[in-house]
Length: 491
Image (cartoon, rainbow, N blue to C red; front, side, top):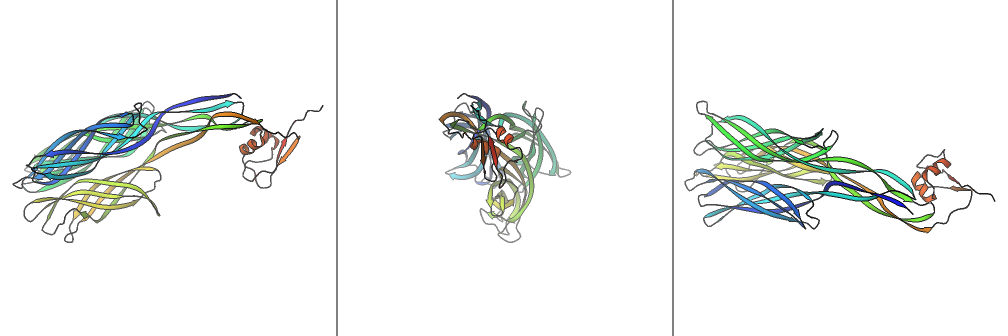
């Protein structure tokens, strides 16, 4: 029995892995009371090896603190790091795409030094060549169907976005934080377009003992060249803030300050092209039993991105107590942690909106209090990747010891697509079948049987079965009969 096969070769996402690592930085004895600490991490590279992915980058720590004289100051340090994510499926030919996020920052004191530790969570997508062999024809009755697969085309780019706004007069910028949120990804001829917003938060020193926080949503657009991008293709992208330049010009006569921000963005994107191959998904022989070998062709990618905005409010959980003697001065380092969960009422995005609340006590000393506001938002999603951006978070103390918090959530849901098809990869001829020698056979099929299933059981091609039964519609209905005619040679 002769058969012919072909090999499909594409490039796609092989799998995803996750890892955690901790990065630590030491500050000197000038730091007496830590008010707020921020860690910004930028990956500089990632490479796949045998059984692991090594990734490396730089962590930039910024601490706002009070010194021994209760003066509010800031300090900055940078640390380079290298980490690894172990996985047996890794090998050097794969291309890793890593995205790192700061999951938590903690501070501890050891002797005269203060140590800031950032817990980093890293999601790594591995891309590589995918192959599978499939049967195309042979000495068999074959069922051919178009099999679809997603092919990935990696791309990347950079862009700058600017913003200028006016605030009340400030003395110095103590801290700034940036979070990029992708809200839309689209393809056109040769371009992957990525749009979204950067939440820019600024903590400033207004006077000798007064703090203030400002927040801006800065829109961005990054156009990434990609030869394979075309209308109708889907894509996904991650955007990170690589660099920030802030300039403040004070107008003391008007009591105002103009702040100009220039943000440099880096984007890593992927365009998914849907291709089709004509493969055999089932086959049989008219005369012999056949043992078929199968292979499952799987590929994955991204679909459409949808977005929604939700306003949340409630009692915030606090890391330390407050009372009416505390003056609320600023809310800074706003962030969100969220996961999609399945409930009885459908999918929901659940998590917390968190921030650092800075207060001035009756003793004239500042304190930093971590506050978190839980949320649960219904979403129309099945297989999606969710990202949440928290902005406009505010805090009020209506009742002593309690903080009423409000915030706006900007949620982006990116559909995660997967295609799977089972195709015939090989065929081995077996024993001969016992064939009927009657001129006419009448079969009573089961209701719902299709043309291919009937042809396979009768050892006739679908065309022969249909030609012998022109008045029968497939799938067959209850009570229908199938007639098979066989040519007889008269001696």
